Figure 1: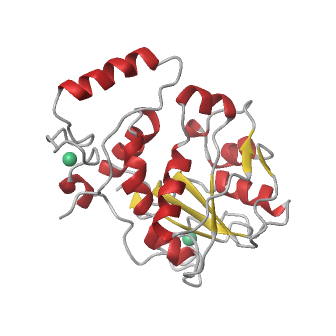
Figure 2 (figure 1 turned 180 degrees about the horizontal axis):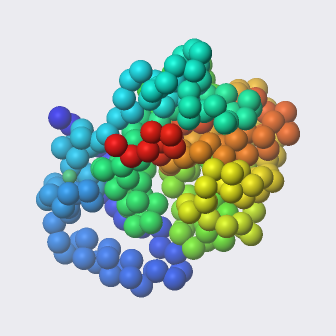
Figure 3 (figure 1 turned 180 degrees about the vertical axis):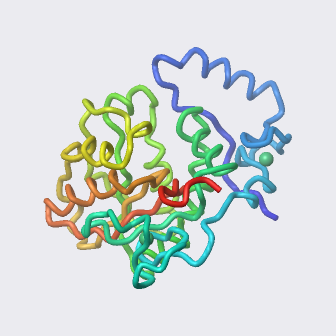
Length: 260
Ligand SMILES: [Zn+2]
Ligand SMILES: [Zn+2]
């Protein structure tokens, strides 16, 4: 089993946490590197997750919905819709995620997003490649990361979705754009229900026309929950005449099935 070949690293110091993170970076140099998921010692210079944890990540079980990639539990009259994506608006056409948002996958998302382990963006972004090719039917797309609100970006120092998008773009040789921006004054999505999420992100995203290469757009995010954020991004991009095929995310928080 090979370990994802990216340099170890921790960073993205926001102003508020910079002192704590500087101390963390010092400790990282003094102590042998450890897997962010299980604490197992690692060789210096490798990704901050061990091969065993990586290979134990919980994949989304088949049979999967052709539209949204979720495990299809009920036959709702075809393979191209399921209970998960039935409430999605038409303009969110396709979605996919390699892992369920639980266990090791949830741990990696947390480490990437909140703990400054930005080196995880490399292998986590590359893990999106098979679902990205499936969602895009194998054709080249322009990748657009779901943006953070500007204030959150300043605080965190990096956008985890952009790290994933850049890694995926490098891996597939697809361009990565920056056509989307996001308003600051919104409630955080994480504690809201499906309808509240949709309302919260309505109109929060703004798009400017991307490059003139004419490629359709694939959105990238770290977690896909109700699809409300991706749908709002797709709507903003459609407003500037961009074609949006769908969204891929590292982890899928299933709404109907729930954690298993
Ligand atoms: Zn581990
Ligand atoms: Zn579905």
